[in-house]
Image (cartoon, rainbow, N blue to C red; front, side, top):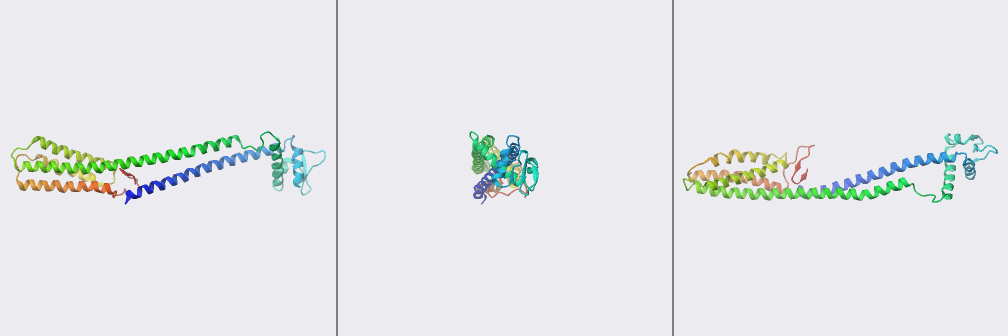
Length: 290
């Protein structure tokens, strides 16, 4: 039954939402890291070819065996194949780009190690990760709370509709029966009792209206609400004076038949087996969105 399936659907939705949220956080972190890495590599390359670091860059290449200094010419380097190239061209040339990157990385590590607090993580990235880490459980907790509260509220509304409709049908049936028994035995009807009959009928109609509003694709409550007016609102209430026992029995049978159908609406709502909306559309129900 759908009442049993709803908590499972809610749990599945929570799991999916959690995975999507974690995926979004992961993608955000990867983008931040990628952007920072690109910016770091660019800044590192600029530092490596600066006038202040050129000699150290060539020394790093010599240590790695990928290049050698050219005496008196600090702006160039002798690469593996013996060519002498400018440091900027060494970086731009696809054939020697890897050698440049390795030498520059070695130089950058040595510079970070020599600097106070060297090797620390970017403050921007650290702050971003901290914010995301802090917001993730808060956002997830808030979402789950809203979902749980919403589901609980819908279930409370559904239970109230079921109980109220069962009770209203019973009360209307009782007072209608009392009114018909009185009418079949007396020439004059009790106006107060008649007013109570109408009050109970309107109560049932109002509750059917509530069910119709929360189950827009379920025709039964709407149809029965209309029949409650046409079948029991005019002929039944409009009877005056004493009526025969046969007429009273016929009217009572009409009341009982219609109220049985209305009570079945409450039973169906209680079981959670009301019709689903057309494919591709959502139905807002007392028990949730189906």
